[in-house]
Amino acid sequence: MNKYIACNADELLTHRIYEELPESTMCRRDAFQRDRDRIIHSRAFRRMMHKTQVFNPNKGDHYRNRLTHTLEVSQIARSIGKVLELNDELIEAIALGHDLGHTPFGHVGERTLDEILWQGILEANIEPIKENFKHNFQSLEVIDHLETRCSEYTGINLTLAVREGIIKHTKVTKNQGKDFIVYKDLNMEGIDLRLPSFTVEGQVVAIADEIAQCTHDLEDGVRSGIIEFSPLINMPLVQECINKYKVKVNPAASSLAYETRSQIIKNLVGFLIEDVCQKSCKNILQCTKSLEEFRKSPVQLIEFSDNIKSMEEELMKWMRDKIISSEEISIADAKARYFIRHIFRAFFEHPLELPDYVLSKYLCGYNKVSTYSRSKIDIERLQDDPAFRRTIANHIAGMTDQYAARLYKKLYYPDYV
Image (cartoon, rainbow, N blue to C red; front, side, top):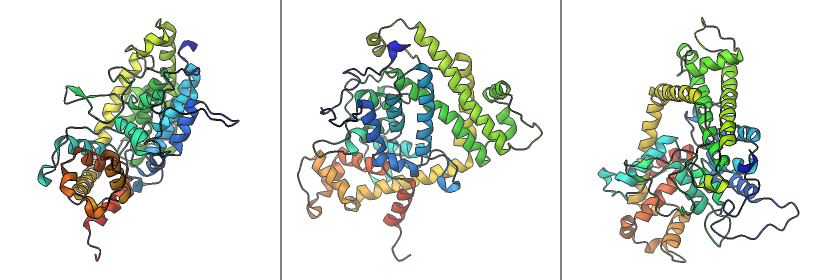
């Protein structure tokens, strides 16, 4: 299996957009360790603590948020990587950075910003710019443009292997059934969107994300009461896990006891990890491609076995129906969509409501000016510029749930109420 290890990180994998000198300290870190540390110390990473995974954090202290989900993906991916003898630092960097581009309020925030950029807001006369918003692409936007580490360039200048793994952690779907997602300003050199990740580590993070969603979102659904006891234990994948690990379940009970719930979820995580490791190990041993050929091929080495994949897809479909389409989540999503559309509209119609650092980044970056004056801003020119609408979307995407909710009140509620 060693022929696919990225430990001997080559020039392609460690290429950065901007050249850097090697570290001169005694405890010199390798390229992927540096990437991991830059991600952990970024503001976007910290903000994930206050971004929704599925359930609003006000619902209780034990529901996942975007940061705890990220840490669980990292743990699952590293567990798989250990078995397959992969590069632990590369896996960790990709996993910790994979959701940096997520919006407040979960996936509805992503869908709403995509709708605004692609279709506009008709009632506010906000024209579309025919670009998209997708969280994995936005993670690259954060890494390359929105975070900063020095004055010489924007972004935190991560390696190609980490950037490519992050954008490939979820399926790169096509837009409008024709072209790929449109992000005009992203540097996609070396990234082929038609193929799975060109590192095995990137493929590991992608499947770890699936496992985390399948199991931990399921546990939150059970905790919330949305997921009922009897249908859950009769799902084929859950039943397979219960039988294998001999989890004791009382079929006469109306709900899952805490201990039983924990046993099912814990074992389900391990069950899926074991299946991935067994199937992927066989795939790697049977692969006859050279490392160079593998990086240019559509080969998916990291995957579930066919039987488990079928059951996992069935469970995920059932969860989407029971959780994502539930009354509670639908109400929360409708509120979030309303907040985001109105915040976007307020900033578009009244650009001076934007904070200085956002206006400065837009005017001094896109327009190549060194300084700006609020009193001299040409508002109509801003409103005609597609880059300004993308700037608003980027600003909203970086907000936490609480900040977005407070901002809506600040923008629309009279101060004397």
